[in-house]
Image (cartoon, rainbow, N blue to C red; front, side, top):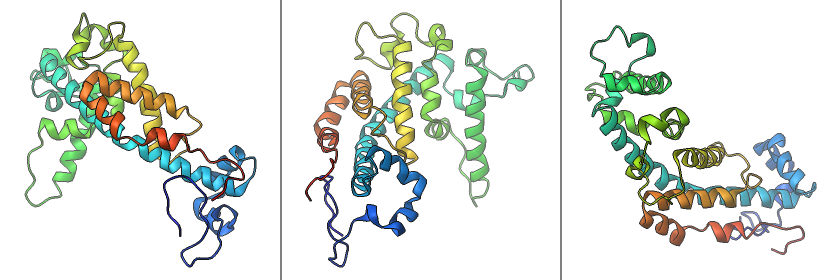
Length: 257
């Protein structure tokens, strides 16, 4: 099968025969008709265009992987350091379920400023790691870094929610994590932007349609977040990403191969 990265139609199959995957019921069955119907609607029931849109959506999704990777890792590192300073060095190991707070005198008083819902997420990840390691012949001890690495983007996003406005983000505290953010940006703005990025990141992870979800704006959000974290990070994304090229190559009806 002809393989290119410029979103043109596939003209031949692997044996050199004329082939249009969008018109092949076996191909559609493999993907599922309900999944393909989304693209058929966008293509006004043109099956060939629908398949090209499907392929374009995959290429578009691919362009989000690198900036999402960089943004999430940098954000996690910055926020975990912030939480280390605020809640104590072993906050991932200190977390307790809400019902255990009063019964455990070892719980650092600073950790009680971390919402019980965050405690629950940390405990859940920690217990999953422990359960897995108990199946190994010589399990290594669970460290804070192990738990931090497993916490989701949703967890880190929630650290910018209104409930932590006073605990983490009073004054100029936002610069401890996002040192290059514009003067008029607040933790609420970061929370909104991260929420938008998280939505499209999750759609990419679950192989869903993204070209109908304002991917251009979401990509710009990603570049901005990377730049606020580190200007060099934002520059790296902008100079190595193929997003603009792929986004501009949306397939059109009756497009020549």
